[in-house]
Image 1 (cartoon, rainbow, N blue to C red):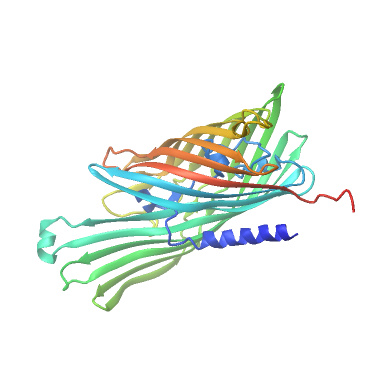
Image 2: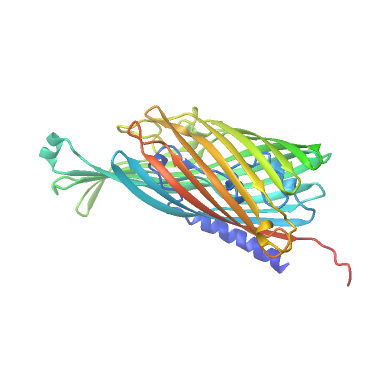
Length: 434
């Protein structure tokens, strides 16, 4: 009982820690200035090591929340939890200009346990999207500078939207698994723009948008597993997340500052419920082949239509200026594999480890000046067994590139390291002896 209480308290603390990260950069990219920022690639360290696959994954050793139907792939009476950390290093290039940045973040905390026979339950929290950017420019028009002096423009933003989810699944005839998930989005995003004059006779302008966002939606999943030959099986998986309207408030402000005096030029609070802004639906399909407990391969495809999100031109979501962002259809192609040389080897530790690799190609939900913002990369991962049962330490790395240096775009090359803690225990055991 003490252990259960400890785990529940740990979950609550993790939720508070995730919520307290507002103001810190969960991600850092100039592209996150648009819409709700960079949408996070979901999944635990297990999924991330396999290129982000998981729609058709059925693995009793790890929690796979990418498909709520997979929660039933488990040993009976087993309790599982997963907690992950990530650290990302990025180098940016636009023309001859280079810069670099790094971020550190908690990316998920999930628990799962059985309900009754072939059914199970999971609950967790993970980031849905992140905003993080900070850049400046100087006015170069000689006519303007001649009249006002030097002008500096600064833009910066931060914040995250998190998702809390509660899901359950059930298996019929030992082959067909169905699952459903309730998702609640919440978070705050701040976007600020400053215009500062070197001439003290001119007033500096401070403007921005504070966004407080919440929404509720659902997700459904299914998996069908079929034996092919010997211990080889094939699993087909599919997921569908419902689109939903955003609620909350959008505060737009604009102040003129001179010394210690500040005048309000604009202050307006709008409700998002009447704005028509939406989080898009998402459909995903996957196919996996599994050779017993030794190997598996998987391919997934996801698609989400953001063209009706309403972000284009919306205050606080759209972007005004020389560059034009526009919503589009996001797509993702992912492939990965897992290999375990000998899970029961008693002499060589590394033969009991699970080795993973994967590749992915993602097309973002927006375009910049008509150009797609695409990402591609390779992933590697390993799980080191710890103590007994299925406890383990999962390590992974994602090496990739986002966008290109052509068409005046900003190219991002990154290396992201992830660490996942896989916790496993047996609950509700009846003692055999008094």
